[in-house]
Length: 310
Image 1: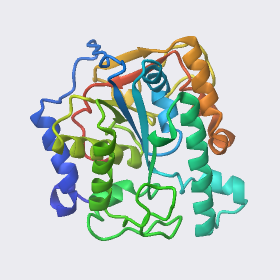
Image 2 (image 1 turned 180 degrees about the vertical axis):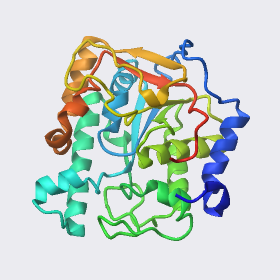
Image 3 (image 1 turned 30 degrees about the horizontal axis):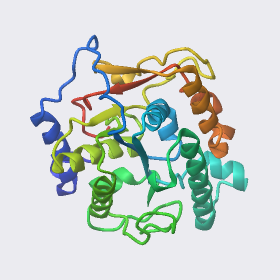
Image 4 (image 1 turned 45 degrees about the horizontal axis):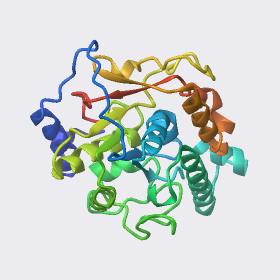
């Protein structure tokens, strides 16, 4: 990728980096262990999920705890997972997939997301889909700020899903920022759980940077915590279902202070039930996905100094 500093299209990412540095967000000693804010009836939780299933992998315990405490839990899915090659290959039996087949996959994954989040206690009103292009979110923030991006999977240059909050909104970085800001206005979160900018998946990095930039414009970052899914080769390790075993820190989170959120056995069980709603994903990625069903969830209070995409 070209140098971010040389491109005017990188304004959002540059603003995010400046906001973090201004707030003193540099890597903290790994020995520090900041806790999450108190979860009670006043909590309004927003989980920022790049794709359907991410909310369950990293935030299922916190979601359940907020709901049980009488608070409000919402999930915003940035994409609908319409560019998952393994899913499309398994379902369509072909490497050459038509746009309508990719959109059908998205509809399936949105149904799975509704079921999974409902099993965790998220009400229908808190299940929010933006419908931006899977594997294209970073491109929107860097190269397509004002010029629409066309998805290589669906052929769409605007949100094609009626179930999304804003159908027809163009696939541009500016549109994504406005839609995300509208979600924040709607939810009024007191706690945001967002992807880490250190995640190796570009959609995850972009979702984290988007959260930082838009949240900063609305008043700052104190209520944001960061989680990671693609945290390094072979992580989480070991793969597969290991109930009662804590989640280890991802290599990509090295040097960051991590809050350890302990799940109760019943919360682990409900997390597994929610994950099983993702039939499309479990058919292809079960060992990896099940490795997140552990007795702890890990959250960084700082995004890390490495904000530029890799």
